[in-house]
Length: 539
Image (cartoon, rainbow, N blue to C red; front, side):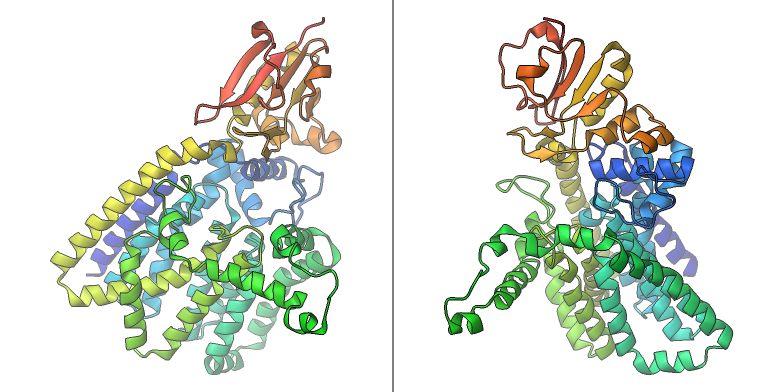
C-alpha cells in the first residue's frame, strides 16, 4: 500500500514537472525585463561576485532601482554557469521549486492527518493549477517564496508533533528564506508566524522549555543571521522602503484625488477624514480579491475582457467550495478551522496594500488556504462515493480544464499580450550584437506598444545578454559601448551618419522613410509592428 502511494506521488511529481518545464524557454512568450535583470545579475554574481552596479554580494539588488530580493538571483547564479544566460537558466529555479511545491503540500497534508487519497488529489490540483503553473514558468520570486512558505509550515507542524529541535531549525530557515525571497512574504510570514505561535502556545511553550542551551544558542544565532541584515536593510538603506513606497496603495491616483488637503467642517474631520478614506479604499481593494470573477473567470488576465479567460482557480473548484466549507465546519475541529481562517483572511492581505487591483502574483500567498480548503472537499467526496465512480469523474473534469487552460495559455495569451513581456527586444538585441561593428552609433528605444508608446522597457538588459557583455566591463562604465537607450528623435537623428535606430513605430511617425533604409521589422504576436530597425546614411 505504501509503495502504491509512492508511485502515485511520483506520477503527480512527473505531471508537475512536465507542466512547468515543457518548452520552458518558449512560454511565456518572451523574457520579461525582470527576468533579464535577474539572469544577468546572477551571471554577474557567478563570474565576478558583484552585481551590475559593482556591489559585492549584495543582499538587495538595486537593478533598475526596484531592489530585487536576493534569493532567486543567488540560486540562479550557478545555473547560468551550466546553461548560459538564456531563458532556461532564468526560469529554472522557479520551475524547479514550483514543481516540488505540490510534493511538499502532500507531505504537509498527511502530516496534518489527512488521509492519502485526498492529500494526493490536492497535490494534483496544485500540480495542474494554471495560477501556479504560469508563475512557475517564469523567474518570479513569489514562487520561490511560496515553496519556502509551504516547507516552513511542514517543519513547524512536524516540530509541534515530535518536538525535535532540528525541525524548529528548518522552520526558522524556511520562513526566513521565504521573507528574503519576495516582498509579499515580508508581511505575510510575520503575521502567519504570530498566528502559529498563539494557536499552538501551550505546545510551543512546552517544547521550548525542553531545549538544551546548545540548541537555544543555535536557534537564536540562526534567527539573528537572517533577521539582523533584514532590519539593517529596512531602516538604514533605501532597499526595503524604496520598494514598499513604489508599490504602496498610497500612490494610487484614485486615492490621492479623494483625500482632503484641508477639512471644511468638524463633521468632515470626524466622519470623512483621510484616515477613514484610506481605510475605505484599502478595504474595497481587499474585498475585491473575493470577487468570483477574479477567482474563477478572469483573474489571470490571459485574454481581453470580452473573451473567455481563466481565474486564479479552476472553474470546477467553484463546486468544491461549498462542499469544503460544510466539511470544515461539520468536522468541528477548532484548530484546523482557525488555521484555515488565518490562511484565508491573511492570504490576499499583502497584495491588497499595493498598487494595482487584484494582483494574482502578489496573491500567491493565498494558495495554502485554498489547498487546505479543497482537501476537505476531496476527503468528503472520497468517502461519499466509490473510487471507481469518483476518481474517473475528477480526472475527466480536470483533464478538460487542463486542455482549456493550455489552449488559452499557449495560443491566446501570447497573441494578445506579447508586448507586455517586452516581445521583440531579444530579436532586436541579437541583430545589433551581430552587426554592431557596421555602425558608428546605435540607438535603442526604451518606449514601445502596439497601440501607442504605452510601455517602457529596459533594452540594455537584452543587449547585455545577447552580446554576452562582460560583467566586469559593464560594472565599471554602466555603458554598452556605442549603444544608447532613448527614444529616437527622427527629425534630427535621420541626418546622422552611419547610425542604426531600433525604434517603435510611434517614435518614427514619418511615412517617407526610404524603404532601403529599413533593414528589419519586428512584429508582436498579434501582427502589429513592435520595432523598426533603420540605418541612416550621410545626406
